[in-house]
Length: 287
Image (cartoon, rainbow, N blue to C red; front, top):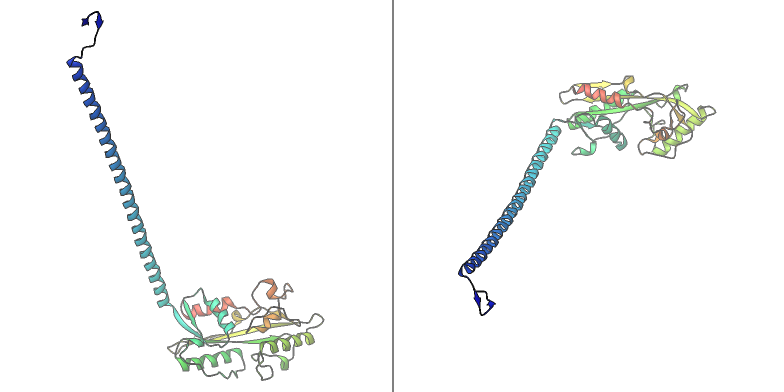
């Protein structure tokens, strides 16, 4: 419409209505977007909560499985202990006890010492003429006292080309009838090697071992064959600087193949009979 030569915008009802519709449409769009965002947030929160619940369930499941496995392991250990044979080693020498425990470790045998017994044992006389007689005497004594599976061992030391009067035999610690300490044994046998070992001061020797085992039903198993005897070795006139309580002659023991002290070579000391002892007990117990 033209008024007095000027154009003037006249509001048109339809335009106003259209503006209102656009305004309403914008508001509805914003509301829909807001709802979608809110819905997305709720879903995300739900997913996170679900993930937390899944993780929680997973952790709880892992804990339950760990507990079940621990119970199974403990049960297996208990069952193993229940099936193990308890065996008393009749010796008062801690070093010999540890040696035998290491020897029998692969077998289902629980080794007991005299200290595990309810009261101390009487002292064995050890007046036998051979390692087996002494082993049998000690095992028989401990069997009568404690009435358990029990075994004892004894050793004899024999030198090559030495007169019978100088052979210690079963009296390794009592060459004169008197029990020697570790230091006294070292000095005595070193002096023998120096006197009779020639220019190098090396005296060839060999251990002979024996074992006697008493079972609860009265059966007795014994062995003194070569499977329990170690290889020959040299006894030196000069002791090694290393020492181990209960095994004084290991300080003097030299491998005759290499000429080195067993302590330096890293091998087992002369007279070792691990396999022989292990096989003996495996046969006796049917293992």
